[in-house]
Each structure stands twice: as structure tokens, then as C-alpha cells.
Amino acid sequence: MSTEQEQVQVRFVTKQEKYAISDAAILVPANFKRYGLSEIVNNLLNHEKPTPFDFLIDGEILRTSIADYLFSKSLSTENIITIEYVESMLPPTPLTAYQHDDWISSVKGRNGLFLTGSYDNNVRLWNTSGECIATLTGHSDSVKSVAFGSVDNSLVHAYSGSLDYSLLGWEYSTENDTSRIRYECKGHKAAIESVAVDSTNTYIASASADSTIKVWLAVEPVEDEPALEESAPKKRKKTEKKSDRKIKTRAMTLEGHVGSVNSVVFDGNDSNIVYSAGWDHSIRSWDVEQQVNLVTKVREDKKKKAKKISIYWIAV
Image (cartoon, rainbow, N blue to C red; front, top):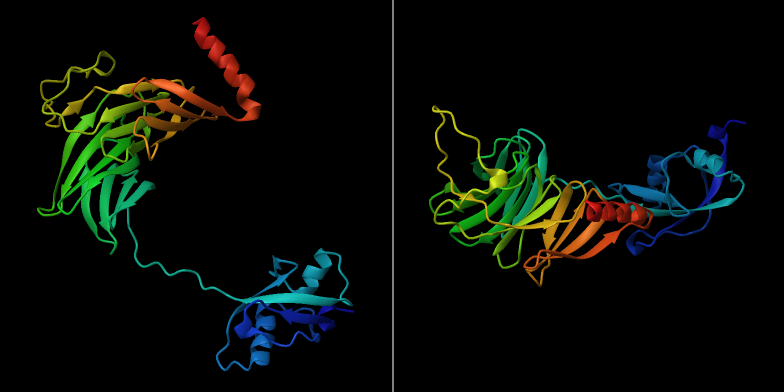
């Protein structure tokens, strides 16, 4: 006999009191799915305007017909099936859209503003109405991470790290609707993967694919800091103009990760403590002033490998 002709005994139950009906067993076609079952419940509730319902059997949402479900569970159609029903929730309707020309890599929010970093090399500042109030252009490659600094009624300070190895500090004036690059932090030898600001807006931390974390003072320098040997710029061609942005090179460098460092964050109560995570399967905490790795957490199955790597360092 075809399952389309079969009927099963069903008890409908719900935890939503306003939709409660008698839990007496009734016969329903075994080929009924969500829509057919929803019609039955609405008829029993005498709803003039149907309410959409979802149905669960043994806590599992029913996505097929009753017959198909019973067959997949090797259950008999002769048993009484208890089906729980709940009002369907419509998918959320987006209030607005934040359009970009490429992938969005990072987003942060503060005081009714949103900061986004994109693979189109730009940082954007948005309000909650979906208006882009500032496009911050300065990176020469994709932006991987963004972070807010201080935000008040007149000035917004923000930071961005990029595949171009640089960390940029930004300032946007809400009064004049103007933006500028406060400075560029130079020193990393590979892409910057993550940027964080401490709770006092005093320090910025940058995590990089060069295996290091650098911690910078957030204050704007009066003039360029002396270039570090490791990040000395190449000689400019005669036709190349000197950049008018201030350069920061002084930073505390935290070394210990093996491979790319992908995430960094300050302790919310202590700006001297930084946490990081990397490709070496480790999470580390650091004392910034002492530049010491305080604690390293590694997955159990990776500990032996991590120890071997540490011994290699010592030998070198």
C-alpha cells in the first residue's frame, strides 16, 4: 500500500499556551509535511488568518513528511506520534545595508558608529542609518583589521592594519567632516592580521604574520621617529614624492609565536597584559613592559611539537 494512502495517529502538543489545543490523538495523512500540519492546527484553533508553525518530533524539526521521518527512524505508522508545534519565526529583515566594493575583513562598533575594513584597501566609518560618513584611504593593500580609539562628540580616532605591513592611525572630525592620517606605524615584516586598543586608549597592539606582536603608544608624534634598521625605507626615486604622514617606529616587540599571529587583545582591566593567538595552536599572555611571555596554552596533542620547537630555539 502506498504511504500516500496511509494515516497515522498524532497528538499535537505545544509549550505556547496561546496556541494550545486538545492533545487527543487524531488521524492525519502520513504524507503530510509542515504546511499540511500547519493547516490542521490552524483549523483546530479556528484562526481566520493562518499562523505558520514549525513541528518537532522527539526534539528534531520535521523537514520531511511524517511517513519519511518514521521510515528514516525505523518507526511504525501504527504508533501514536507526539508532535510538538511552535510558531514559526520569520527571518530578520535587515534595517540597512553597508555596501563595499570587496570583501569585508573586520568590523567594530562604538557610540553609534561602525568601523569596517575591506579588501578594497579602504577603511569606512558608518552611522546606524547605513550612511558612510567617511572613507579613509591610505593603505596600498587590503585592510585586515580595524579598531576604535577614543570617540567623542567632535573627534573619532581609529586604527587599521593591512597586508601592506603598516598600521595607520586615523582621525575623523565630526564637526568639519574631514579625516586625516595621524601617523603610520612601521616595523612589521609581514601582513598585520589583528589590531587592538587598550581600555585607556593609550596603547595599540598589532599582531602580524611575521610571528610578532608590537605594542605602540597611541599618542601622535610631533615628528618622524628615527627609522629602525629592520624597517628602513628603500631609497626613493627622484620622481617619488616624500610622504607627508608622520612615521612611528618605536614599539615594544613580543616574540615567541611560531608562525603567523592572527589575533591580539588587551586585558580589559590591565593595559600591561596582552593576549594573542596564532597558527602554532597556542594562546599566550604577555607582560608588555617586561616583554615577557607569561603563560602559553597549547592543545594537548600539540604540546610535544611545541616543546621540540622551543628546544630548537635554545640550540640556535
